[in-house]
Amino acid sequence: MRTGLDDSSLLRPAGCGPTDGGPVDGAAHDLAGRLAHLVHRALLHEVLLTPKPGLVDRRNTGAHRDMDVHSFLASARAIAPWARVFFARGLAATAVPASLFLPLIRADGMACERDMLRATRGVNTHKGSIFAFGLLCAAAGRLAGRGRPLSREPLCAEVAAICDGIVDELCRTAEATTAGEHLYRRYGLTGARGEAASGFATVRQHALPAYERLLTAGLGTETALHGALLELLAVNPDTNVVARGGLDGLAFLQDSARCLRRDGGVLAPDFRRRMDRLDDAAIARNLSPGGSADLLAVTWFLSRLPAERT
Image: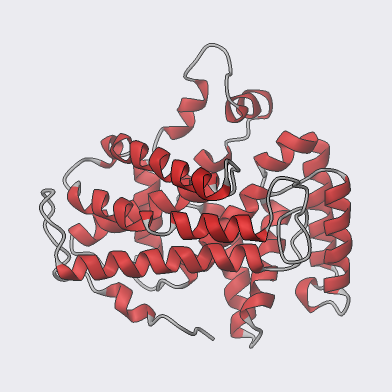
């Protein structure tokens, strides 16, 4: 069912450049460009999927008044080139222990966020995706620098190694100062940090299998993405939802998704109509599962990499 980019070209580790921070050679440059292309496509697949409960799509702006599809398209264009930067950082720092690597890309992440904000006139469209894809592309550079092919499990394991202990940052101050810190201390929710530290376990264990089962069954990419999104809505403790609607809001979205999944999910004859209704209900409750949207983009991205090498 895959079309477009030839994924086999992402598997070539040979000639991917030095591990001591020297110049990036042609093969590594090509690999970095392909990753940037995949990141851009992943972000487009996510925003254009319609309907998505409470999220910006082609149907409406979800539970948002300051952004629309055009904001996300501009943001995706601004973010995608940074994949090359994150990859190069990882490639140049292959010898740096994973536990010491994260600070080396934090400034790049902040610079990428500034480009996003310039493109959207100050609207935060993709902060979570910058975090996720920055880590994935940097981890890809580290693997390539070791001569290892890019496949899902090693890539996610490298992200987990880089992020080991990152959840502890949520308790780094005596008093919570960020939304993430408040949610962690009040509810124990680890959000994007926890997902990265797990090597995107929610994607690997739930969303990606659902996506690929539907593709294998002969259904199209849009339907398969809806199936993956339904899984994420059902199982992901989305901190974006809790920040807007508390645990009651999270329970509402999860219960609704589980009910729809139980009734046949994307194969139910009234699936789209029920998703439209859930979208309307989420908007009425001011709920936006932005964390699940980020993980949906990661799902598509990982689906383009092979699973056989661990």
